[in-house]
Image 1 (cartoon, one colour):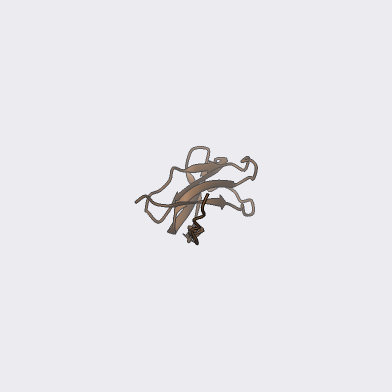
Image 2 (cartoon, one colour):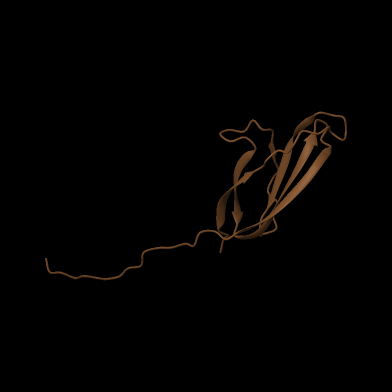
Length: 107
């Protein structure tokens, strides 16, 4: 049986401007989503120029607990700041309308 995936939106909010610890310019934020299967998805790098919504992307995750890790990077790839957030995706129950009656009529 395959794992049911639920589409989610990951959105970041930037804080107050600070000096970089490396002295190199900020380049972007690398975001890695790991869902309940334990599989880390490929990193998505956000720069604030994403459309239609800056600092936001969509992905699909398995139902259950997961983690999102965001690393702010400088132009040399050095990590300037790391933040993580856990989540629990419960998904939407799969529903259907069961057959309720059968009618047999003469033709």
